[in-house]
Structure formats: C-alpha cells, structure tokens
Amino acid sequence: MLSIALVAMAAILGKVIWDYSSRPRVTIDPAAFEKIEQGMTEEEVLKIVGVPFGDYTTGPTLITHLGVMPGSGTVNGWTLDTEVYSVWFENGTVIFKSVLPAQRMRTPIGKRLRWLIIPPDQGKD
Image (tube, rainbow, N blue to C red; front, side, top):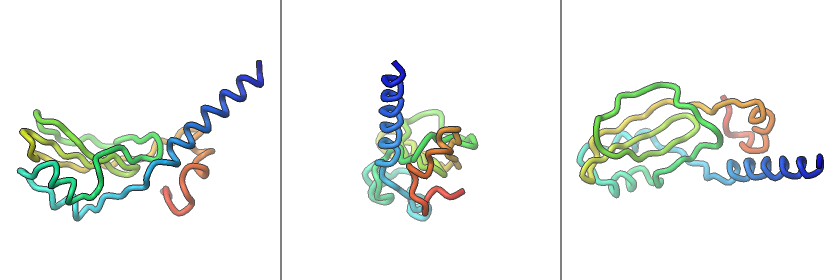
C-alpha cells in the first residue's frame, strides 16, 4: 500500500514539474505595451506585443495590488511571474489597458523544488 502511495506521489510531482518547466519563458516589452491605444483591434494589439494572450507563469502567482477596471467589456492579457498585462475590449476594440505587479507564491514544496523548475539564471528575487 505504501509503495502505491509513493508511486502516486511521484507521478503527481512529475506532472507538476513537467507542467511548469515546459511552459514557454515569455517577457512583455513595456515599451511595446505602452503603444497600445484605445480603438485598436485585438489583431493590432497582438502584433504590437508579439505574444499570444495567455498565462506564462512558472508557478502559482499572486497579484499583489488591485487596479481600476472599466465596468464593461471583455478582458484578455498576459500573466507573468512579475506582472499582469491586461487589455479590455468592447465591440472589438481597446477601451482600457493596465499593468499590475504580481509575484510568485512561495509554497513549502515550491521552495524546495524551485531549482528543478526554473533555470538558475531566471526567477531571482
């Protein structure tokens, strides 16, 4: 019974490590994000930033500040380990954008396994 539990734990741990280590390392150029203006289409926004919308974190991430958000529209963006870039669209065009700071959540197991997930030259605090 113990060996089954150990195999199950190893499988779960392997999946977590694989999920986070196989994510692409993405950065968003703040200067490019600043070029986004009201009225632009989603296609124009994606062309400026050069990366599809998505979650590019390397582990559990916490947004550390609250921001002002418009009362309508749909939001898309990029979630990174250190910031969250958001763009709100209404009727297919930009109505608002924001950048909020974020940080990786430190979990007991995450602290111990971080060296397996993040290469030594990345993720330094």
